[in-house]
Length: 187
Length: 187
DNA sequence: ACCGTAGGAGAACGTTGGTTCTCTCGTCAA
DNA sequence: TTGACGAGAGAACCAACGTTCTCCTACGGT
Image (cartoon, rainbow over all chains, first blue to last red; front, side, top):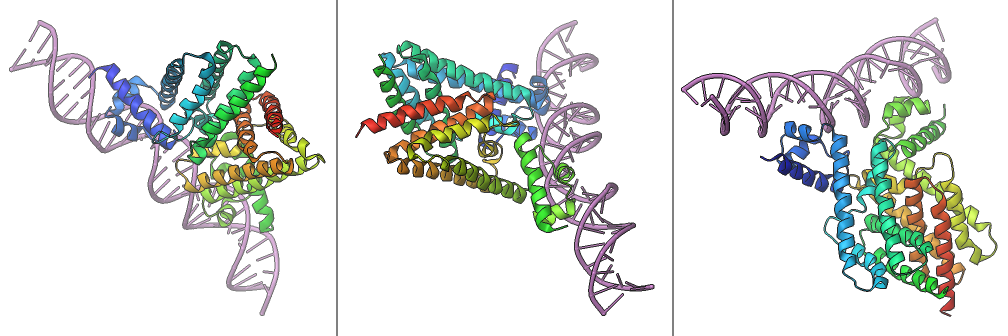
């Protein structure tokens, strides 16, 4: 079997199990069973569990941001793209198995003990914030709007994760609309 | 030694270590060393580690909400109390050893595997949200403001935890001010 | 056909950590 | 004074888990 295929299968299983149950509660043996990749191969691909965790977060980061950006880019009007972020969040919150933000969860679990995981979480959040800043700029809105929009999105992710409801996305979208309107009035 | 004293010492050590390093990475033996309470006594007071975790979260919940409420109640003008929440958050974010919201962290670590911990996190967040709702009512503002204020506060806690900065509190406070002003204009 | 190598299954190893047990000592009532 | 009891220190027990090792099978090149 191709190494690339084994790597994908390992990461697929890691993503499903780590996200659903937390990282520390999933053992390498369970990962072997779920992925169909032998322990020997797993350790060839990822010499330690921590490296597998890093690869999981890195791949998920890339996918998560790409999916969001692709969805939002479908709106031709730049002003529509900011609410579109919250629409996309709402769809995500409603997916089967949604359990909050993988990076916030990983930070709670490993942020204090793994500097690399903490760094990946910071990088992911910074990238998301930069993306919001680019949307704000495209919409020709004041850059100061980025921070509040980011906080609303983060709050919605946390709250949706804890409560299991999609409603925080709608609340955040409406609040964002008000903030955008108020910022527009400044001109 | 009094049982109540031992219980307090155990919970003091648990709070310090669990909050700083995460729950799963702190062993009962380390807790014994840090608290000065023998293992035998610890297990008399808390028959399992999970029960100690629950007691830690419960006591911290009670203290956290009391301190916030006491601080905010110092503002005589009900309209000043909503920004006062974010002032208090800012002070908290700046404390030595601040590592984000203990409940969000606990949820990331144990929410998927411990139904009781997940329930405690939900209860804490709901109580905080209810408290914000009471402030909104006292200020005679529309109840729909509660959700956005809550999301801003949650987003600020997460972001301050991950980045180590107090700035999210100021951003959230300013956004809250704008939302309050916009809600006031509706009348 | 034969050998060397890769890979899989699963046992084995070593550590960690939650929980319990043993042993000892000090205290206090009779 | 003695004996029962509670408490502390720390060893012991046991399961889980990250990581490595053993053994066996299959296959590709000569």
